[in-house]
Length: 438
Image (cartoon, rainbow, N blue to C red; front, side, top):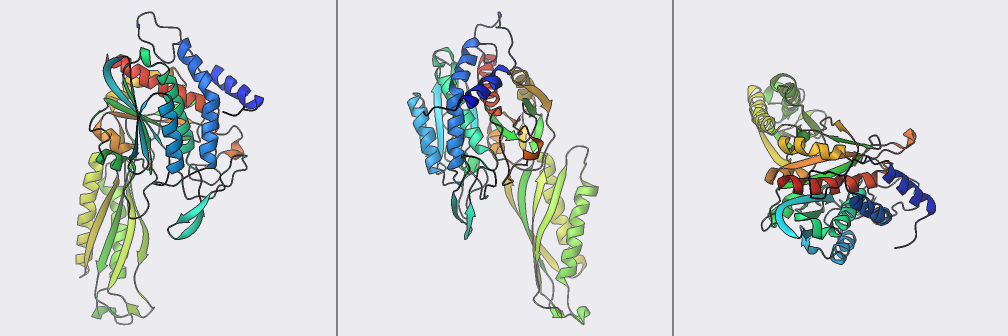
């Protein structure tokens, strides 16, 4: 490991010293993260490595299903710690299994490792200069969503817990997942593929935890029960009419008019048929294609769009409402329409009981706020369908407000002072969960 500048060491120390601490428990013999001087010391010691890993991964980003270098870095680190390692899951996924001194419950911790087809526009010494071909176009590649931070945080957590192996009563599974942002066209990938290839087949966790850096206040963690991020389904609607002369529309059936009515009809589902006091919902048409020239009414129109829901039951009922709306509007005008919905990520659903039980663990680490539900999607949801899950947001906003940009922006930045908070949070929930299950 190369030497870090003194200013980085000082900032890391300052960040670590600002983490809330509580007195050692006299009623619980098992070690927990936030009340153990030993654990705090281990976290302090690993932080220079965490910073280096984050910067190295940031400078060498890789798109989904192509994270070969990143996976190799992770696997080598886990093996050096004496952790059981499985590689090549869902193409480039890496899983580490740390078995404690005694048998007991199993807890899984997950980090996503892929980057985005984004050209970075941040002036950093370790900024990405990587380019690649994506969908036939030459593009930049950058960690514009903070997955480099997630990966480094979990690598640091693995090192802390590996050094505590003899004190751990249970098993920790470290999931380093590729292609969270989606697999390349024509390929499978991500959490669903890891599960399909047997991620939980031999060793099924009792709970799974994940985090995401956000441009929120440094020193805060946000979490909520139930729907946290939306499901994300795509749809295609093919509207069929009857081609005719544009000057004599009565001789045919205009699929453009029908398509326009369908777009408006879909909006009445979210505004008039869904109970918005229970869950937000979004139906958006992103493209409409049909026709060749001004004086010809075409035979067909095709629309594509996205559906976002924050409640699993609402998701199912909205699909049914869309089918009825599309079909009936088309038929009312003498045409026909076919709706095809392609299921995407499910709702990222935080198990209420698990979230209530583990939120006090996060409160040992940072100021905890209730997260607002948001409509981006996250394939952590697939794990949380298999076992109870909890997904939380780590505040990592730059200190200068002019440097704050949203995730996926080419100017997105992660405040590195959030990294020790992330390592402490993941270490804490893992240890506290194992101890509470006993």
